[in-house]
Amino acid sequence: MPMPLNDTPSNDTTNRANPAVTNRSLSALRFAAAAALLGMAAFLSVAPTKFVASARAAEPFNEEQKAAIGAVVKDYLLKNPELIIEVQSALEAKMEKEQAEKLKAFMADHAKSIYRGANASVAGNPDGDITVVEFFDYNCGYCKRGMPEIQKLIENDNRVRVVFKELPILSKGSDEAAHAALAAKRQGKYWEFHQAMMSTKGQANEASALKVAENLGLDIAKFKADMKSNEVTGEIDEMKSLAKNMGISGTPHFLVGDKSIPGAPEDLHNQLEGLVADFRKSGCGYC
Image (cartoon, rainbow, N blue to C red; front, top):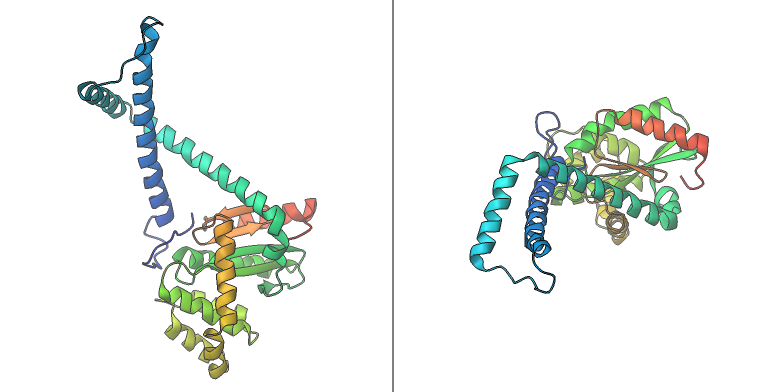
């Protein structure tokens, strides 16, 4: 799953549960519990009317009755906790379906700009027949975990095109690194810079970006100026707005055609390779 908005970056990708999964699951669990309680309460509030004369309107519950209903619902859920999991699963499935529908609707109107934008940061074959898009943050541990899978995809497929979209949501350092990447692009070194930053240990920020820029032999004066330019800031703002409109709030998030892969699953390369192959067969006029 993708890493959510958070002010504390992490590079731990092996021993810690994915925070997006944890936060989303906890939120869904709380919502599921509340929904179950409300549902049970609503049922109990309506049920008595089924058994009274039709001419008699149901009277509102007093505080004592409400407390009794709450106790019944709580007791039932404690004895049947699997119901919470069922509600949670249904809620997550509903949320994923809604996200997919929102994505498809937006893609129908903006696909060409998403995949074939004039200022795109591209790796692989710039004239490739199928484009993979990744929204990422340089301080996202899951983005770093997925990086070798992207490199493998590019190495094994000389017709694939990969577009990277900065989505610096984790920290001030993430924003600095994003500006630095686009500054490196203006010297023709985006892919080299991107790979180096993704393999850098510790916090990604202006200081670490400057070290990478120096190692790549970039013009540092121009690099610093471009980092602070309105043009670079505007490009990042556009990518943030694009992600927001698509309902993307975490990183990494991959797009191929009208399909998406949130997060960095263990079989990321296989999933991306499969989607690329599918769209090659079916055709994709914009990706």
